[in-house]
Length: 196
Image (tube, rainbow, N blue to C red; front, side, top):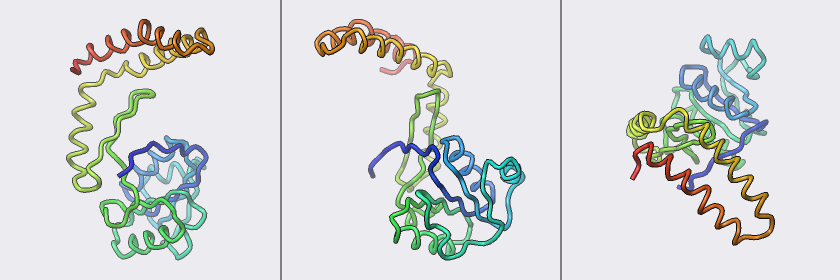
């Protein structure tokens, strides 16, 4: 597996299915800034709200051949293995990223369990083998990481930016300033969390 974080702002993504899992996946894609289209004859109340607010484009019908064309990323959450398999097969012919929920054999990517604190994002995966374990690790890290760490990252980012500006084209000066000004601040954060 090759772990990465995708920039999905204004990227066309498709969710097929309208239940609670499809809702969760849709909300996650929206949070990432994706342009989401939803295909399903039945949808949750929350998905209905998103559609009414024009946050999600909606096709009130079952999946049809050709539906995945033109999308960068597709999530199949239909509860119908045969339909998910058709979605997978169509997606891989066009090199589209495809995730069939709870069917690792019909995925070319997995959605990890995630912890987000501002710009700090931690992703945990078992390569689709045991999502429940990844979820348990997520809960563990949520108890360890303080909610304020996002603000700390922003503060340290400003220090880093200042150091880069002050150092101009002198890599030695930049390295020295990182070691004397930035690294001690990072150590304080790590020590406060209790990570050794």
